[in-house]
Length: 384
Image (cartoon, rainbow, N blue to C red):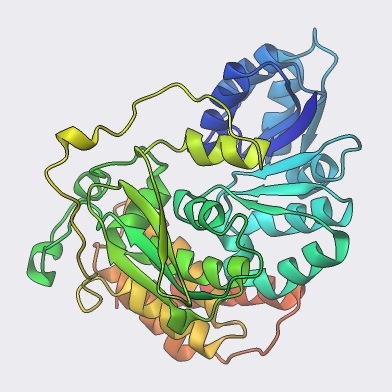
């Protein structure tokens, strides 16, 4: 019986992870945690009977204690609660499905205690890859990517230990606004941006897909996961989301991982790696395909990808600035306080005004995040 803990159990990745658990009979969910969705967290706790349930606010933890009083479940809250979950004895894999830089400390704690990481928290590697990857190697811990693109690359390089990678080809759907220009994007609504053509994802990551920031974050993650320089990581648009990513080796051979757009596949692969198991769902019907479209991303219109390449080229604390500025800007857009294109303006302003810290410590990463949030508050207050 494999034991897992999930931080972010009520989000898109978290709920689909629990779907995978339901479909198998040899995974024990030892702990779950969420940000604020008490109702769903209670339902999950009653179904899976974890030893620990965590939530961010202590007030909501009190609600949880009352709702789960008949069960032998420990309720925890805040960062201390996440760290307690991350350090639980007997847990084999920590699924980091939480959104935001809040996921960094629990990931480090889990690695320190020898747990493998099923990684769905982009911010962990984007901002702290220089800390996480050496630590994982030191502790002999596997970082198992859950993002479909990184899982695809991970699957393609399985068994290729001694073969040199020439390029990574990370695919993008292009999002809901593929082919549109800046004049079209001037007045798009939150509802428009949330209509992803292929994937069912959380609100934040869906907006990131529309801006191509998500693909930029994936480029930075890929650098750390696979030890490939950004100039050897290329983004290609594949709007059907059939090719999930590709790897080119030095002999010119390219391996691709294909499948229907179903996040349960990379989740299950991470949980059972290197074993493959039956997964219910649609299969690709090649007879029904009229062709596989490949296109080039428009980085002039969708600046998120260009900003990502710039941030990782500069290095140091700049990827943290890129990530935190986008996180705050997307939240403002989802709250309908700024327009879509202002997401780019905010990221640009933050990157231009930041003094880079080389090789930042975890504390310096978190200080940079706070600098970004303070800068954006002042930027918005000026009505820019």
